[in-house]
Image (tube, rainbow, N blue to C red; front, side, top):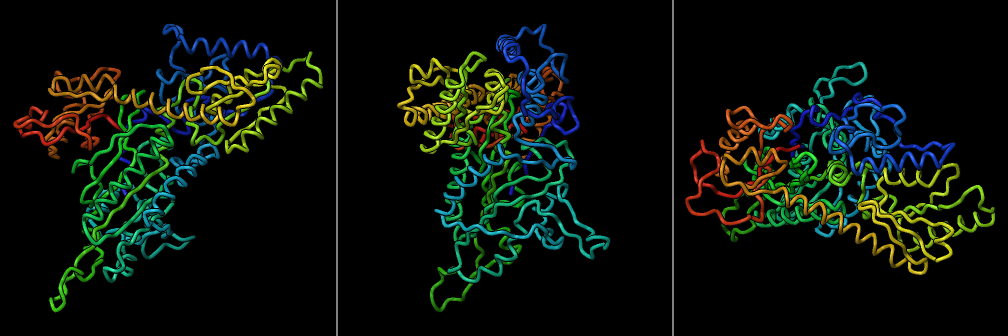
Length: 577
């Protein structure tokens, strides 16, 4: 499966277990002795976040005196790296370990992965794909059977050289991907055209020993994914599946994670090592104006079949003719936990993570409010009982609901904690709400307030959650569309990138030309320097979009002035993760 293709430095997204003082503080709440004062302080803090005064809002690297370190202490727009680390830790999505680049997926994030798995698993099984599991370890001889493939992963392979105190005669690779692990079996299994298609998938973990700084979810030494490997009789059958899988991947991002993507095909420079061609979906991180590879689906052609001697007799030959051997067409496709990081970076804000309703482990939080020292025990119990009833009612409607009835915590404290954790919808129930037979509502994505009659909870709450899901996708889609710019002349290339855009340019699709563009857009060419605050890395091709903005005109030249060749496609370029 395709490499993560991550190109960032920790100066730009410095997320590591040892950085940034205070980032390791968890989001677990502690009782407050003076809830009213705390509410006032939190309200003041939230007000200042909505309308920050630049002179009073320096980048925050560590907690300052009297600052609430249970909440996010830095603005996403000011310091994305610090913001990201605080969000994933304080929202209880992930925890660091003593092995750099290897992380604990806590229930709030692993739940998202489970829903992705269930969504995709249902669809590939309908395509005839079966789940299986192959060993974690791969022999060196097997891994090196395909030269181009292994060279693409050589720097990332982790090796086992000892067992206990005994040095192994032959070292073993820890699975970076499973083509070479699986295709020896395919050679045994596939003997006839009747054995085709063979469609297997794995849900597993892989290890790629990155020597760059790790970034939780986005780039780690160990990550979770699925990898599908299929074999087909014809190129047409293989090609149809490649695109069908890509559609399912796009649906995961758009229908579940509310993240817009662009479908396309990788250039030769960027395609999977050893592949015939690679299709991709590409996302966009507005905070830094970078693209990010979301998932890939590859047609491997007959390359691996020839290397592993997977062959059958040609079924199209007539009786009496010499039976020639033919090689199946193979595909591989993979989707990783990187998707969770993309979701966090796109939707999160200065209050914390914002999780779309369809993947949030808690879709609705019910908070009982208005209980004071003057509240009678009877009135208190009436409110709490009604809160429990609302929870039960919504659970019976198939929603994931929790009731926050903790004592010793102010309503404002609870509101901020659940906002930090990204729960899509808050329902508030107080004495006045109960009198009116309504609950007050607060959306996590927009902060919009409203109310819903208690009698229509089971119909109105699901509708509101659907609205939140759709609005989150629309907001992200509009932002992505606004930052995809058509650039026709080289003089506009770098300035448009520096404005936090990805760009569509006429390009020849040549590899050497692409390398030249990457070099010349890195701010090292006189007259093309990047802004001092902009990333210094050069732009790479993200994909050749399936939907071209317009036809390439006859005689239209490649945007690279050093190239001189005719343009072949509109190609999406950008700085990328």
